[in-house]
Image 1 (cartoon, rainbow, N blue to C red):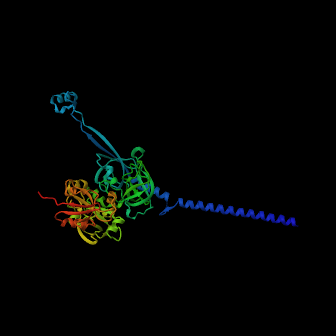
Image 2: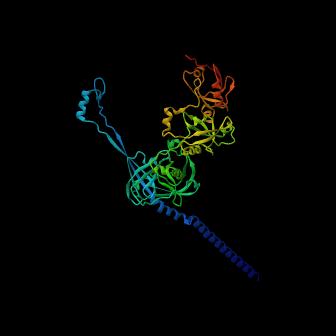
Length: 507
């Protein structure tokens, strides 16, 4: 009996073990199947009724047909020369300076003919009107003597520049064709970081030997990026879209589209250390293009509003120095002579807080608002000056086409007159770091004119002026007030000590 009980319990234990293993295996299988089902849901995530895959295929089949390849030619001419050199006992002299030798060599050799070199360019574009109007980058067709456009179906047409604008880096070209597939314009103001987008274009141009455009996908990585002057030069890349959709050479001018197939940007550039794709591409927001497309199609010049100031963003230190509640606003560092800003009374060290009833938080916002303001329109500008709010009315001017040349021609005015040979500016983190200044107030001497009273007194660039004739100099505003009233010799206290800056004698 005892033996039978032991066998019974052993059998029951064994059966229980088998049952437990079966249950565990079943649960594991269920969880595995559930995981596979969840993985399938992720892989086939949908967008407005389409799976992600189907949405991208739909974009390629619709918007992709409106994307074109653009090939350009630019002829560069190099002139020949008639100047030959002949060794004489007196050294080599050009034959152009000796009539007999020149005539001999011209008769024997003839003139060296002019040479022509062809420069080829490749890019992309997108049809925005069924009658053959194509939107692309201005830099794609810049200086082109010949433009060839290849449609996605392989047909080739001669392209004609209808309108172009270097600052926006946008252009319209036209081909003689009708009933073409076109791409709808979307709304770039509605874009969100993380949103899926598709880049379409012709990377590496005709190297692919196929007219059909390339489609790449990614997300909006960032909005309102600025590429800076090192990249943009005179182009306005202060408000561009950043994406990780692959953009390669030849993609410039092609569209960046959402999953509805709407154009949200025009691909313009990549950031790369190797020249190839590294996950950082940029596109011009389509809303920026919408503002000027009609004028480009009409062949009209694009006008941009101009204030005529050089500005900088506020840092924590600058905001604290000017006793501002926050860093919102821009600091006026320079004012151009005869500019709208100067005529309106805007001064250096003013802090622009509002422009035309719009709050100004940073330089990018101010540049964007001013550029879009109609030339000739009068607007109110709210600035902080000497800790007080001041309202100035400015009549917006037209931005010079070449601002650097305009400045070089004498439109640029220094921050203040060089009083007795001194050029000074407010103390800020940049010049404090440059000249290793530890003080928190004063004005920095940034330049000294040779043979001036300041130079003779011993002042040098980097000196921090703290007092003039025992009157405290905390900022550039104090400095200007004091020097305007000064007559006779001036005792200047700097961080290095005192210097007597004499009044220049009138001869």
